Amino acid sequence: MDHPRGEATVSAMDITPLEPGSEEQLRPFADMVPGAPADCDQGLVARVSGQPVGAAWLKDDGPAAAGFVGEGIPQVYVAVAEEHQGEGLGTKLLGGVLSLARMSGAPAVSAAIAEANEAQELFGRLGFTDVGFGEGTYVLLADLGERS
Image 1 (tube, rainbow, N blue to C red):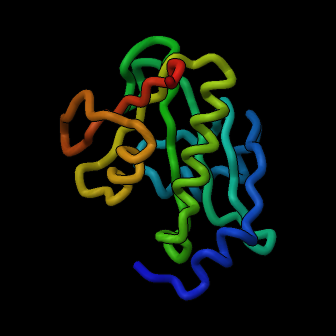
Image 2 (image 1 turned 90 degrees about the vertical axis):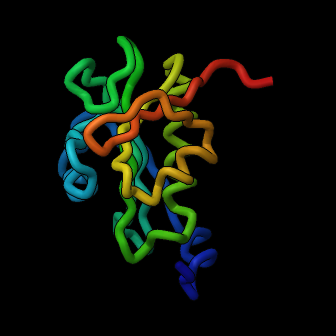
């Protein structure tokens, strides 16, 4: 998808932290991701011209999460407003939240991605691998261990 303002929009974007208690900011994005919680352990929100246009967040919901792979491994959620998809926002947000997870000591991060979700390629580029499939959903895992 081509966006005439693509790179200009990304360069004019502000990314700021989401903290626990940010439900009001997060809810519109959580509503875009089936099964996503509207609260977070940590995350990021992207704004263009002061308006929130995307978010990526981590939540360790344990076995209740669709992408659960093990204790202490949070699940990541990413949502970008439709009019800003294809501009690189998802890549910046997901990369940033993976850095947050790494800094907080998480050994890995998981994600549950619908079979038809075009973001599968994004997750693959950022190091996620397929570790399971069921009910139309892929479970992906990114090892956050030391990189050589």
